[in-house]
Amino acid sequence: MQDATPSQPDPASSPAPQPAYGRVLLKISGEALMGPQGYGLHPPTVQRIANEVKSVHALGVEICMVIGGGNIFRGLQGSAQGMERTTADYMGMLATVMNALAMQSALEELKIHTRVISAIPMDQVCEPYIRRRAVRHLEKKRVCIFAAGTGNPYFTTDTAATLRANEMSCEAIFKGTKVDGVYDKDPVKFEDAKRYSTVTYDEVLQQHLGVMDASAIALARDNDLPIIVFSLDEPGGFRGILAGQGTYTKVHG
Image (tube, rainbow, N blue to C red; front, side, top):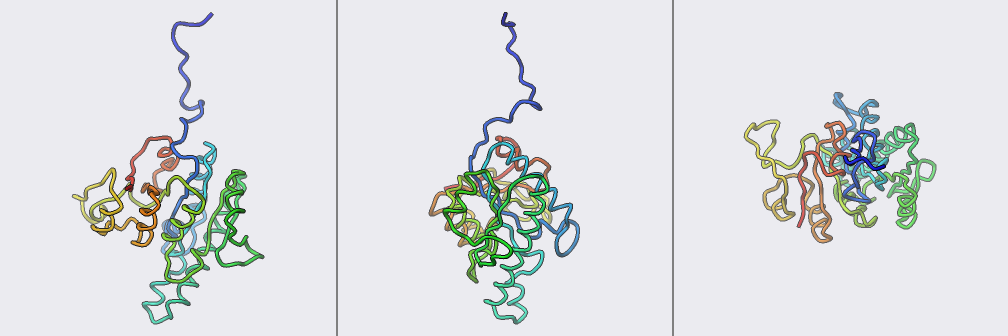
């Protein structure tokens, strides 16, 4: 006999609500992997981010990632100190491969099949970038980490993330940062900084809001690819936003 009161699903045990997106690209900066250190990789921080990815993977979302290289080497800084820009950028690309391998290691410890796919072929270390093969990995629920940027100097990992998200037919780019969205000025330095809940691509470009560099924003705008800016320091933030909760800024057309 049916009880009159509808059974209340336990939110902890019941599966999370249907995620808002089925396939996403997570973009994180190299600095996000530094943790409290000033340089390099901080393994507990890498592990924490891997756990965030695992919680979203458990929802059945297909995830690809792009990680920057600024914790090891930043091409622009190298060229500012007199190094040839092309060489400096290639060094920065190799730094992203190191970060990608660290993240792969952390994810595979959590029993998540992960592929590192590099735009610069290095067969002993990772796969070369072949679009159809990468799409197939995602369909099989493997996490794909795209390394070495676009494989070209003068392009940032932000542009690489937008390019790969388009190629993989991702529904959104999730940009994990230190703050919970896009502000009109740095909220760390200014207490009166105002957070936007939504902002258009053109506003980001006109007001220099620093979400991503201009070429990445333009590429996202041309293909109508939303960018969700959220805090990676917030535990469960990535999963929460996919389930429709949490604080974030959506960059859209």
